[in-house]
Image (cartoon, rainbow, N blue to C red):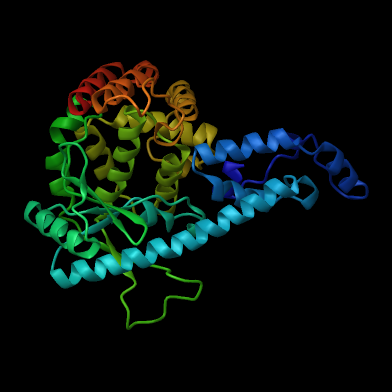
Length: 384
């Protein structure tokens, strides 16, 4: 279903116990009716879509099914309601983004929109991508302090710092906004050592504009700002992948992040500088990681080979292991269980989180043993 929602690949009727037919369709409805998945099977599919935050994409796939093969009415109309909420939430997010960029522009602060709504534009149905936070990058250190002060003024909040990094979280009209500077990523020793220098260099490229859809009508009101600024593609593309791998190592990543990366590559395949991308991956020591997820994308998630640079069949086994890790961890590790409850002290809860990561890091170590050890050390040092 994910393949269908992402790429328009027709669903295989055999999934539903129906043989493909040509010619006369008489009696097909009765056959379909008697061959539908059970209520529990449909519930499991929807629950997995929620765990992996791909509900909207799966819903788009369901719409291609004959009515007789669609889920039971209670499940189907619950999905309709969820997708409706997604659309309204998307408009709300875009309005908040437009408001923020107008405020930052007036203050003369350079800021870029990352991930989330910035990559939603590459989906067949942008508003059906499950949204999360608004992520803003302020690469200049002095501007970062000004940005925090501006956000405090706009929200009336001090903001919540994330660990020891340049990363502060605010709430604006019910929307979570994360403002971050340039932070190191401990995916592996090489990435940790070179990421900041690479980021500063790659951000020297040309920024891009994103037109935001803030309601169901076309964005044709030139009097109000409804645009956001995106970072140069060289930085933006790599950041999407680095963010994916950072969560892949630190507890778990959902299929949504992999879908973001695949759709980004697919929609920009004709403009990506492959020579520069190869140099960047080697600089950060991430080429094996890229080729592993590339195999997951092509072999398991239906991405066209021509859309995924550096795919190699030699990584197919690792790609299957990576998919297993993604499915077992859930979006941002939601399927992980902390052994200590809320009533325990803050330090004990953090220690419990660390313990709960052992199985996750064990799976990652099958793929990237040296990087898994380095990443776990960095994570433990930062958290404890």
